[in-house]
Length: 184
Image (cartoon, rainbow, N blue to C red; front, side):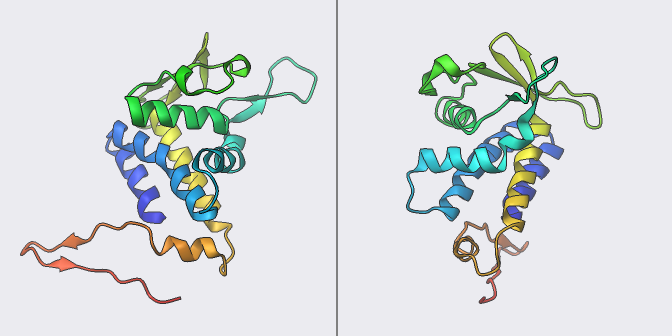
């Protein structure tokens, strides 16, 4: 998994925003498939995000005395965004939401802040949620890293990770360098 989360961070550092964002949006697909390979893709994706990512995007409601929280991005929101971006090249999630009535945000807007500069992140503009692409992508990568670090060594999920895609490197002369994972 580290090669994938490193790729997200590298793309964000290089300001390759579309690569950082699209890889970040696919990570819950990969993680949830590893964790629950026989579950239906949509529900397992939403469940993984709700458990591993949404807590980072949940905050107390300002001005309220109750325990109500503002959920900036739920698993359902994330899944709708993933579908809109990866299948349509759009940030408009309205076609991908099953229950629009309960949703606060119908669109997303990503901005790119300068490195080490101020960012506009988790700002609501009517029914649009503004997110900083660098922060969002890195938050996804961090969530994946935490999820992986919490897996038990004997976990079947870790065993399935050995089957993740890797891209072999080549030397200047064209010779392929293969890295064979050690048996566990």
